[in-house]
Image 1: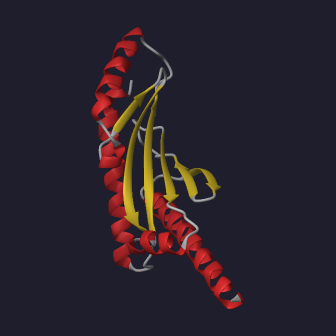
Image 2 (image 1 turned 120 degrees about the vertical axis):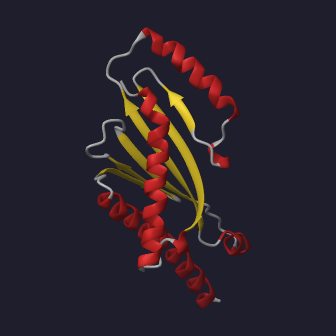
Length: 175
């Protein structure tokens, strides 16, 4: 019985280490894309990394949050396995607010009524001095931490395409 409990604890630690490996691979990939890390935060089941896109005239920051579907039951872990959700948030900062921005914010809010980041849509949030674009992606962690060239290329492609997609949504909001 004691060995069964120890075996379950080891599996939980292995799942948590996969999260940390993926975050390390994301930091590595983003550094090669010219986005140094400017912030970390980790809680139970979630890891958050914020990047500063260097030499980017549009984006102020790009955030990746790894949200692990956690559960204590053995059946739930067997179903979920190494699945997780990546939340991507790109932000544009404008230091001067224009009265016309209030009208644009209302248009953005109305446009968001039918958008869902869970369905692959990009959702825009327009505040007075910043605009954020959000997208979620459901992934299998094992396909990105293979420690081989193919898994790194796949991760680089996902990050760069998401970064470019969110950037395209924000270009019109940069002043």
